[in-house]
Image 1 (cartoon, rainbow, N blue to C red):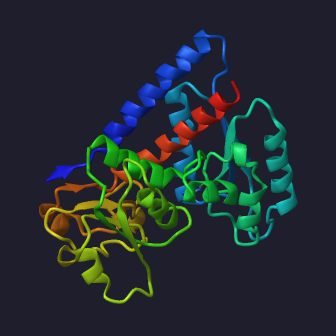
Image 2 (tube, protein in one colour):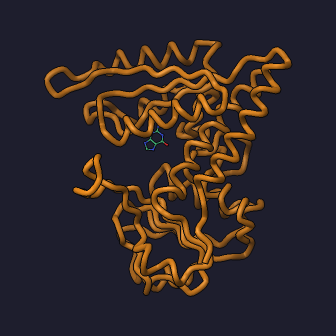
Length: 295
Ligand code: GUN
């Protein structure tokens, strides 16, 4: 059994990106510039955005963090957020930007996603990028699925003709990953099944998977009896569970019962240190791609 080391792969990719950025700068080109909008103080979002800013530094990018306060007593006016998005859309110095999700409930998340110019949508969430991705056109790929595909590529895990089962049909993981892995490409060319809360005989379907992807957000959901011996298991779950032994008071748990499942696998991603670090890497790759497109 091989533990897929997302931390190491992401460090390698960030070093590759940093080398390209320095070569660009030596040629007189601008550093890629990523902006991030963070609304409120959701703990997970604060952590993710801090990691994104740090990754920008590691890659030699310029980064800008724009914060908005929003509380129940003083909710952010959505028009203010939209005005900032318009400003970033029009700013020639910004190559790409993201609005960290989730947003407070009073803000229409889909309207925000659609307000970002597709050429600057380095999250790959805009319907234009989603549509292009689904028909295999060049676009910004959504970060988590792109990170998973990169791990499969770098660990030489075959996908062609293989049975992939994805548990979870979210717009940011399950659906785009299914599109990418069924594409006539390498990695790709897989036979993909997407399971969800209404799926019957879920365990039977999971047991058929050569590559099983758990992306439903339920800690420990995938148990050993659901995994075919020798399968590759990709765990996208990152649920915070209480842990009094940690300074933070919590730890991250994946959707896979790692201790029971890992001995059965050929490859498995740990949580943390598997898919998570790759997601940020993909965002950096997309931002570099956005900068290159403006050369
Ligand atoms: N919230 C959880 N994952 C993501 C992501 O990849 N991008 C943004 N913008 N928000 C998120």
